[in-house]
Length: 167
Image 1 (tube, one colour):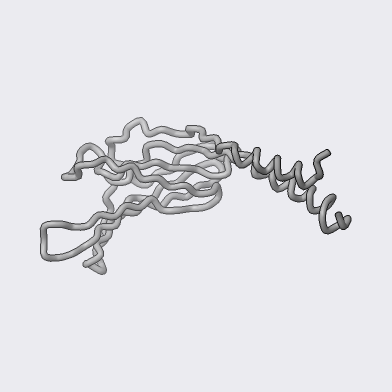
Image 2 (cartoon, helix red, strand yellow; image 1 turned 90 degrees about the vertical axis):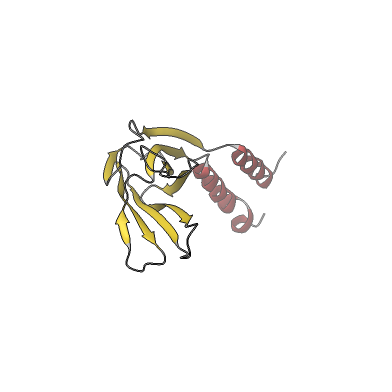
């Protein structure tokens, strides 16, 4: 007969093999359009975290960018984060790094996107909105792969097993 510790370890290994479930919550119907500050109504109460995929290059064109980078942000429900992208200037004597950021706040009933800001590192005061960059493409809800069950299992192990009863 397996001890409670053996059963717990087998259950943990089983849970670790499970993958998180990803559910599409929203998809941008106009990914080539300019995307200003907006709010999207979505129900995130069933999810542990949210993953946002955004395209870096300018909506509606490539603006001399020869690649289509997709940037992602994963944040727990109830928290905020930034979608970010960096680019280095080339072909000039002045070194600079462009930093694009779009603030994202994930609540239980909506996701809020700020405008996309670009800052130039060699100009301390330079900042402007560029809402053709970091346009959200898709939003996924991430369901836990059994973390709540794992916590419950550890509680049972601590109360029934080891320390409390001296096993």
